[in-house]
Image 1 (spheres, rainbow, N blue to C red):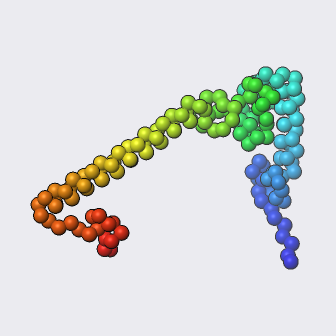
Image 2: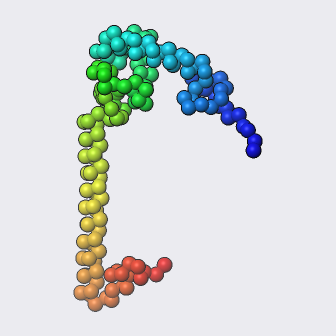
Image 3: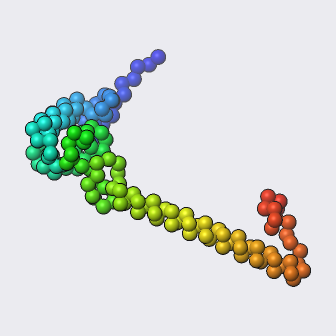
Length: 154
């Protein structure tokens, strides 16, 4: 049995570190913990802070706070004004990746595409039936595969 030292580059600072559960080196872990403590202190003092106000008070980018909200590192249920941003329209959201209107719009578009595809298949089926009936009236024999696609050669 060989013992390997599993290492990687820290995504925060680029230094080499031994892989751990947090996927950060010790220095970045300490910095992240300190930032989280500052944010929690600010939120305890004023729980109605918005994401932008919190970012300003702890001198950090709002994108980082939104990323932590999305990952679940920062819980929003106690703080009514902390929000993430919708991936499509940037509207404030409390959970997920899309706001309600973007989600409904995408569902509507997908349903429309499926309906168009179904109508196209129905149209093709009707055209095939019409073509086969016209061939029969002309006295031309039907191909075996027309009725039984699994019998088609090739």
